[in-house]
Image (cartoon, rainbow, N blue to C red):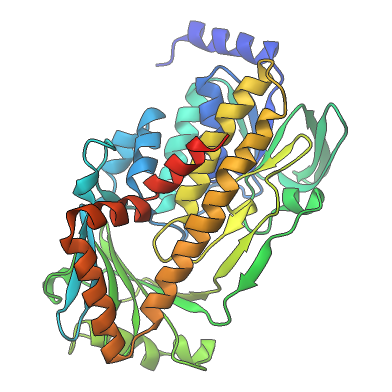
Length: 411
């Protein structure tokens, strides 16, 4: 049972400072709210949906992100809900040729020297409960933001809730409302870049792949005679993605024949597998020109979008939230608002030069699947893995530790 005196104390803190408005109750918005609360600062979170969605979004959590979640008090519980991946590999299923990268080389530099494979939708309720327990976070579901306006001193968001149009005003607003961000559009910014011309197919299945594919890891980027893509172990299921053949249509990729071609190439003679879900999605490589306009800031997919190969998008959004709330908390307590500009200077180059560039390179490497090129690519990666210095540098970059360090060094 919660201590009523602690709640009364939290309520008093909330009355002394105006809340920050956060639009979006995904991992980025909730990490922002919870971090502010840990620093004694209140927030109001507006979420368009009536509840947290259970859907196929991000599922890879890198070591620095796990450390951040641990700092927020939810790390241990969340890690217990997922599948640890102490290493990942690039694997040619047909030949067994592979390059293996050991996340354990980061031991001593991170507290969680492994990847965690776990569905994003399992994290948001943990963050929500931790945020509610502070007494400083007010999450309002079914509150769909429709516009934002601001002046020199305040920002106002208009939103629809329970059939009524409402307004909320505060000194600061964080836009964490995703790829189609109303906040971003309201402040006159757009995501610059490109959309990949072809879709990617995502499959989830309870099929026990580990019994049929030798040397499979919890995290794998794969080539087969039929397709290339990835296979990731999640609690109770596998998540499989694959890329199109040249000129292949979305309908063709989603056909039973195409799906079974992919699965049978991974574990010959086993298709068809039981399938939980099959869907196609489009991939983007885009970034906003600035992460702040006046009293409005952007974080996560509202600020940048990248290919999922490498699992950087949601992780990068959480890293945004941690960096931003560090600065915003200081500004709320009296530092110059110009400090918020340092957030853009630190995080935008990381998104552009690490997240977008690296995920794009990862995707292009996996699409380059001619047999001779597959061998050449894996041989090159094996050479990196065999060199302790290059191996550690590669893992630190792929685990997003390098990006965090580069951002922190920017002034």
